[in-house]
Image (cartoon, rainbow, N blue to C red; front, side, top):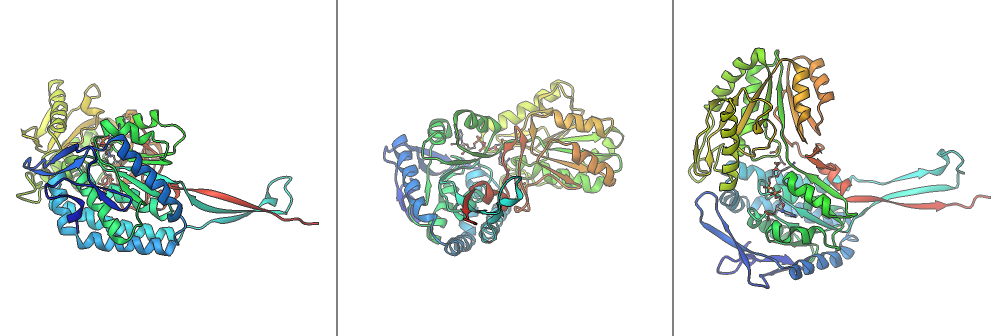
Length: 487
Ligand code: NAP
Ligand code: G3P
């Protein structure tokens, strides 16, 4: 299945106009495994000329693709989901090596993605337009009817992050294709081998040549060029707030859909079910070492129950498995890079130096940071505000729900928040006041089910994803007005 997307030296190629093309310049980037540093392959460091060809190809191919019937598009997406599942073993193994995610989570990412692709096809079948009579507007006569349909935007640039290389690529590609756009996928460099395999799957399923193209290369080198390219009509980016802000600054008149960083708070009130709260916090904060945008990234707990909560969290943390996914299905795995591990460790050290209390963890072996819980974190510490993208959760003690809301909302981020309480009035009071895209009541912060709207406010993003919402974001209304001549 994946043989012809690379050569005998493990140099991967890009999908351009239906062909797998090697690097024209001969420049490649090594992709090493964060698990054992083995060389998994090399991807082309594409030049501006190569990027031009990918985008121009997409532009041309979109003209035909937009007119392919919805039924045919649905069939292609269904087939993509089937092929994805047929290759779950190979893909999960590659993903595990490439981004150091444990095998079980890799497999669930692949099967979740197959479900997402099918649901996207089904939802697109149910998109419909409307006809609007003009005579409801003051002064208008009854001779006008607006027929509103949805039409594609053109070429969608999909930029995905390292942590969900299959899911966060497919969740952009599938809706873009269903509403008649063509796509240029720029996967995260660490994650690009998985991204290229995904493109191969869509190709095998029958996506016509030129409709899906891939671009590889470091974002720091080709990112500005790709995002400001005249041929791009829409950008769907998932990644850090810093890069997202840069894209929104340098682009002009191109709609953006961005899912960025987060600092999701779990707010715990006095009457919370502490068993439930602790198990949710541990699962939400430490799985895949906290390298999830929606990970629980801080606990704001009412002081009166803080000690009890900490005991329960400790019990749950003791059940976490830690280590190299090559050896076991670990919850906490080595971080994606030494730079990431240095950053997370630095946040822990700074909090300790400023007087926070290390409750569990704080240990580091190479890029593996042990699950860490830190109590009495105060608002003058970086850990109170910065996104670690690692397995560390700070506890900030508060006097009541209003102080929790105040601190939660002081964050530059606004992805999700969780409230643990048995009082529905308090739950709604807090949900109403939190400046975030989603509030979870008595559950960890998380994106799914993937048909729910998913969005960040403030520095956590712009626009709304989630299957139906992504389809709408990647298409626009087109009105055709019938003017009847009524005598
Ligand atoms: P990242 O460093 O921002 O990279 C994301 C993507 O942007 C990669 O494909 C990267 O390519 C590319 N890129 C880098 N510089 C660019 C530029 N100047 N122009 C255009 N593209 C550029 O993020 P990451 O480390 O992969 O992922 C972690 C971050 O993503 C965290 O902050 C996390 O919260 C966020 N995230 C958010 C969500 C969400 O839905 N809200 C989901 C997942 C992750 P290279 O790999 O080649 O640099
Ligand atoms: O960080 C990726 C984002 O899509 C989160 O998904 O399922 O881990 O909440 P999930």
